Image (cartoon, rainbow, N blue to C red):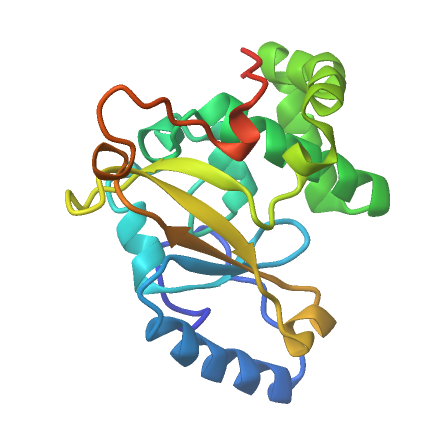
Length: 218
């Protein structure tokens, strides 16, 4: 789907100024649409530039929110949407904390970015979230190590609305071509795995890569 399409949003999606870049994004949107896996392209602020139908289907049951819809800003969705845990399994340890770590790194590299600072202010307004960011996050990073913070390759739990998938896992694959990198964009694909009830079998524990050290923080 093109960046102009998708869920209703209060502000337009970020669009590059170059007509050539816009044409590239249009063609890239066509490429994403033939992919059966949920895939999304976002900028350094996690504002969504492109997402495909499989991505929208994954979050089809999510209720409305003024600032934290998954097709608007994926970071805000993970951190602030009250329905996020409906789809994102082990929401706190497997999704919130890794993304808070990614956010902290982005703020360090782009400390004057107004959109990132706005997210930081919203975190500060939530006492539990702010405590997790300032105090819990450093402890969690020490506990899981660098691999626990890295998104690419991480296996995280999901609850897919399609019963053929149901409660399952996805491997996050960050696969960004140079043209997107030059625009400051990142492409993330969620590679769905077998449903847990089929893959794990009775009596087998199932652990995710980023769920090794849980912290009740958000």
